[in-house]
Image: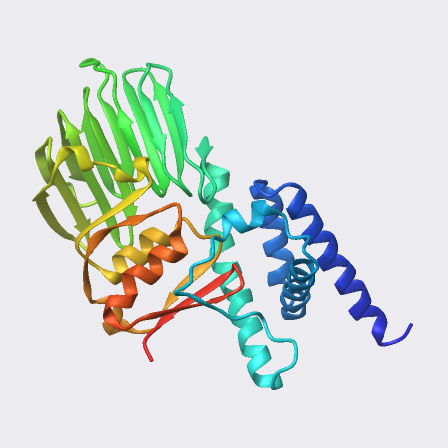
Length: 323
């Protein structure tokens, strides 16, 4: 066996993965398997990146892939290098592999617990046994427990909008980490956020508790009120009820939100990991409306006013920084 054999074999494997993904672009299990293969060896990341470039140059890249990674003129796309200094090539490959592992591990854990889940860019409506409806956002997972005198839904990842059928004998609970939202009949959005939970009420009212600390966060959060519980701190603000769960219309509405908060929300709509390298950039405040159907372009629009730039290393790694 010659030394070229392993290289040829790895190239063939990469092309095989690429063709399988092109044939089934929405198969989340297949993409998870591909990510695992890439993460197992830095050379696999390089081989797959090279296969994608060859495929693109020969005009064979399917439109489905372009739709999942929409081009943004403001974003600089840097292909994985094939001929660079060994140290830099190792660093970049290791970074991509590490990001793949970070992205995959929580997904696999959530998948084992979830009754329903969505992939990146996918939304889904679920009608529960009592007629209540759950609208699930991108990269969201829930577990449902209807038994006896209770109706419980656990939000495992992402965010969801709930339209609850009234039943005073069976309160409806949404649990997100240690937070429990209790209702009898109303419409509201619950979101798992970095370090905490967000609750927006469109109509009706809900009670919000921290069950771990046995603490009431809001005894009656009513229509047009928004609660944010992050790092143990409670903030309640007013908003237009019509803007509740704006993601259902493909919009991300920011009102004096930090860049870091918006990055965390937009990351759910991208296939890979987004790294914010500048802490001061992440602390900047932003107000605006962004298109969730074009998440990379939205990232550029968020950071550009503060001197930030977006650099994408293929679909798996996006770095936000300032010169």
